[in-house]
Amino acid sequence: MRNVAIVGVGMTKHVSKRRDVNIPEMVYEAVEAVFQETGLAPKDIDAFVTGNMPAFEGINTPELWGGGYWGAYRKPVIRITTGGSTGASVAQGAIYAVASGVYDTVLTLAFEKQSDGDTSVGLNSTSLADFANLNSYGATAVTTQLSSAIGLFVYQATSYMHKSGLTIDQIDKAAAMLRRNAAKNPYAHLKQPNITAEDIAKTPMISYPLRFGHTCPASDGAVAMIFTTKEKAKKITRKPAWVKGLAACSEDGTVLGQFGGGSINIDPAEQRSCKFAAQKAYKMAGITNPEKEIQVAEPYIPFGHQLFIYFERLFLCKEGDAPKLFDQGVMDLNGAIPICPSGGVMSNNAIGAAAMVRIAECALQIMQKAGEHQVTQDVHTAVAHGLGGSANLNVVTVLGDSPN
Image 1 (cartoon, rainbow, N blue to C red):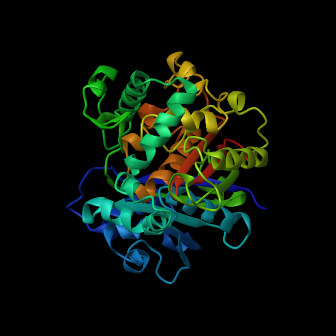
Image 2 (image 1 turned 90 degrees about the vertical axis):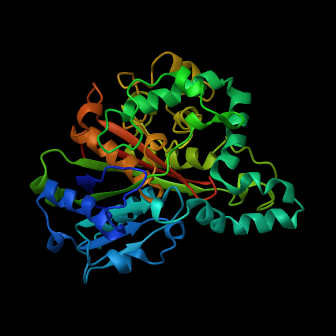
């Protein structure tokens, strides 16, 4: 397989409501930005890979509406949707298209314009299969609480807290850190440079143990990237970000893993599929000791407690050690392994784009183009993560400053 490089990143500013543009216009802002950065034009692109959550805006096949506006007229277009991990799946689709030799240069774009629809209604529509399965087992009492993302993740949080000793105070501190990181990111939605853990602790409790301040916003935004071959990358940019390894893994497809596939009461905090995907991606990248070889991590963290879970599931520390290492400053912007220097999904959540933004942010760190939220140490290797499906699909991508 051929080496693949990211040569450009374009993003829109993420906000709660973009009333000044429609979906194609908003997405074009990211596309235009990546063309300006690379000096490329639609004629230089062999194919497009795109994705969002169509049910959230209530628009089917949006690529047919926006493709021509984005430069994809008479070009091959693939749409991928995998839930919250959509953006990462879209990027991996483009990577394989280039690595396989099918295309030389591929533009990816992912987006969400949540203000145009009703995300909760859209989310519930994708959960019908889960609810039908639960109801067949007489579990109707839990369906109301599970009809939103936080209704699922409170179970994950309490399970992890019980096993690791994580406290709500530490979740407060993690949420505050991510918000402060986001204040340095020009594309982020929630920017609170002076917020403290005490401020987070004053926000209302939604469902124990998660407070309002532990949750992600509903954002409008888009991201675009260009992937190309080793030969072409050298002509486009001085310092590309190279794809070193990638993998995706899913496990039991029902809510919390209950009542499906013969499995009962799978621990929602275990996230075995993340560990399997990380192991495969690291092996492809030649990484044997992630704790020592990775300088930046951008996991998918829509809720504060997940900072700790995915730091562990990506093998950046031993299981159960994340709360202690967080208190020691290991994950700070200037720490040994900064986590989400961009502010993460907790500060920037255009759902279809969110997982691709994780890859884009890792690329920016490697290319030394992250601006004010550039970490202080040199970034040779970075890992990005996306979470999708019914919290059962994990997508891991490893980037580096040199090809394999």
